[in-house]
Image 1 (cartoon, rainbow, N blue to C red):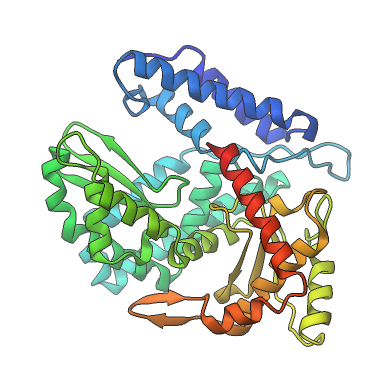
Image 2: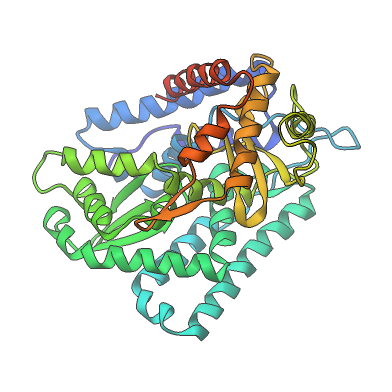
Length: 400
């Protein structure tokens, strides 16, 4: 077993910096330090003929934390009324609790699904854990949106599953995973345990003594059984070669509305307070007023409007039907983004409020032909979409 000197220390330094907030003029240096630590860890592992997944516990946790950071949306110092920035609390055992609940859901899928008392108890426990995190944040004068990425993702996951409807969908998805998991043993070499969780990666596999743990993004909540079979083939190929067809199918689904809608629904639980619509360079309330006046005659009922600090994909906006919430990516809060581009995204998301969605072959479709026709009514549609395409490419290259 190899040890990466200084990795855990770097992890602690990064956590402290994120808690205090990072001034804009230090963003690039911070990103460079994090990427350098990740690259050095992966280089040492490669030279030793291993992978980061086989690092000892503390080093592995530090590597995962750094790897999953959203470097495009770094927190900046927030001044309180007294002139000092509130300290983001360190919440212990959140990852351990998420793992415990995920393991319970996997090994007792049928029992929980078939017993209303079990389901009610689990919903209560999930809500209690999320309430505890909110209470700690409130006591520290911060919101869940300011938590470290791993803790924020765990909080959103608990809030999401504390809904009976979402928990039911989660159990159904695990049922489909159970149906195909035995076939994965040929590639895994041991039984496979699946955790469906909120995380930045599509999947991650972790070998243990008697089981292979496969963590899969909650975005696959609506994936059919055939897609779960492809996830298993992708994660546990028979032989040394990756199943290219299965990989393509999995990545195609990860680009679908079904996947993105689940991930963005999770993110809304830790969005900044609704009052924080004024960004550093753009004001969402002003954007809504302009779009409402020009395209809806001022008659559009005002939804909840929020900035999204770390949307999990290169999707610049999201409308959450169940909570009547519009979320726009904080990457748009930049002096380089013209006002009309922001308004185009706002218009797009408000159209989702108007059109809703349709279900076809078990898939939820939001971008229908009628929706696309209305979206093109934005006065500078082509220019705005061209700008967003270039911005998406820039963000994608930066994340590589």
